[in-house]
Image (cartoon, rainbow, N blue to C red):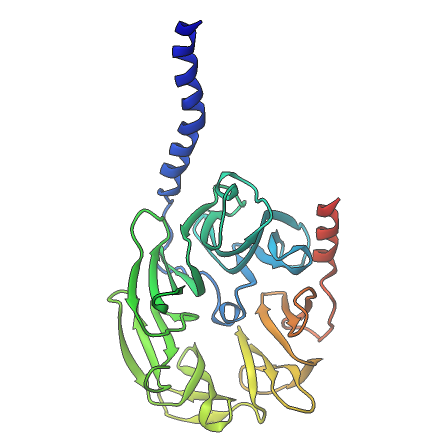
Length: 344
């Protein structure tokens, strides 16, 4: 009996530990992510990255199911739950999804048995979950095979960090300044200064150095070709456009804004009027302004088919409207039905 135990115990240990060693090795290995990858759009990242369209699919945080991760076709069909975890700041690149884990109700897969908040990676099918960083983070964006984000801890508070997507190397603190990483064009992060001024800056991800681009008083800049769209602090946070070549400055709205999201040739924006705030839509040139929904909304995320938004005071509901077609708002019934089906 003692002799047989000598063989049984090592065998049991192998069964327990070898899969863990294999998963650790596999989590450090990534199939290549193209260098020109940008994990999500500027507007969606500013809207907490609740939706991310990639390679013909839309990955999203379902508010009808505790913000857990789902995937669907752009029209809402073919919906499937991928994880039991509450997620935000979704990014996609190569064969992988990257996200900030807000909470877990058990999870699916070895990587979520003892999961905690932090930055995670999984496959596009929601498998092989792996934690890349356990700290709080916001404004995370995948650029090539690296994640840039605002990292939070109780010592340094908010600092800019770079985290390898493969998780095989240590993360790097790049700056102690608060740098919004949402807008990425041509390997550069465009952001408004917060420490000494509100000028437009560009962070070069090749050299990890920063330089000033324009001395405007900007907030939430978005670069579209040769134009900078931004909320103008000098003009009560109205939306403006500045042309880098001509120097022309154009007011896009008469109202103060809380938020805006540019997708292709349309702009969705939330007005801040005290009497009649509303989510609005207009063209990139500033024409065809129309009301999408009266009230105050946030988490405005746009895809090629629908644009999604949530009431500011109720994150358990989500609305959507056509991104480019006629305005017709509903409560995203496919997501509600999928959540109900999953709970059975």
